[in-house]
Picture 1 (cartoon, each protein chain N blue to C red):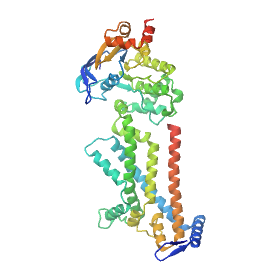
Picture 2 (picture 1 turned 45 degrees about the vertical axis):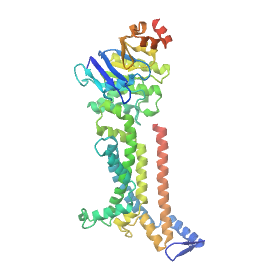
Picture 3 (picture 1 turned 90 degrees about the vertical axis):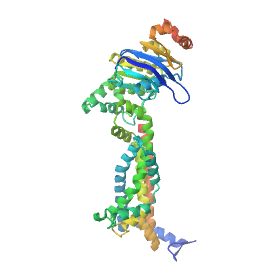
Picture 4 (picture 1 turned 135 degrees about the horizontal axis):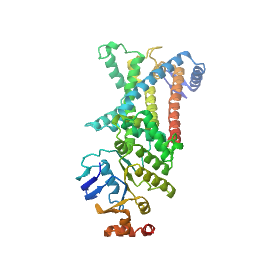
Length: 239
Length: 246
């Protein structure tokens, strides 16, 4: 499954080009964050990797394979919540894995405990708060034991406390052996979470560096301009 | 004031009041004939509803998630069949069940079973069309995550039906309303036989033409009450589900 290589990836809906000649190589460990201005194609890139969209050019290589041979999960910015209980919203995602009912139950109970939702297991998922919903979505993805976890701005609309809880869970999922690839607009979060940064601009990867190097010494003019627009976060990182 | 009822028969306001009193008396006394008609109506329509739901819900859900050539045409056809005149259904079922028809050997014509078949044919397109719309809206929202999770189409259909269960209950109740209020199909395939295939709507039509307005009005009140209760139940269910499940 790894290294995951994107070669000359191109996505161009009629009338415009969003991604063009995008090259990227990702190893199988750590947390990679995709940064870039609005509309540059961060979410689109995740959807292309997830196979939800098909590029018009280029190819995606999964460690020499056309398809990933490990499990892949994705948490969307507005995660799906079925009108079922919290428990059922995790358990159903395990059905395609061929686990027994007891196995599905055990794994669901375990993962709900890890994200701190054991006491809400019987409640309807749609009545959860925004932060709880994201934790439930992460629990669902985690329960699938993914080799690659794609996260699309998982804390976009959360308060600092809920954001911290979600970040803790993301770190635990990484520790559990999953490669995490996520988008964010929150540079503070990037400094806290990222092992490496992928900076997108003008339809391609402008920089792919370790987080420390990216924030301390951005190489491209686009990245420098992007970071200067978020100066307070840079100061926080430099400390 | 004078009302004309059956040809050549006119009712004064006083006669109308008397008729209303008689109608309420029939209801209050749990008139045996009236109860028999109401009971058969409920048995036929509820049976048709169960069969219609068993066929219409999976059909509608499958149409919502499937992609195949001609899907659009099939959706248009099912939507159009929602407005199918009940007399046309009656004639088609009559032809199918008549002695020389393909199912004539079953001997169902002029029986409650034939009426159930006719009402099922009427409610299946309604339930399937509404189900298709409700499930398709949910499918558009859930499809990317279902796809990544790796759910098969049958697993997706079952989950979507579970997720949309409250909206689909309303659609199913609408089907019951359609079944209970139709008259043409059951008249043709049931024959309106007293004590055997006479239901509320056919009885109302017959008794009105005979000028026996008391029974007609009593049956009409029962029918209206049932339809009103169904709608109230549907509304209450929606409100409760919105509070309980979001």
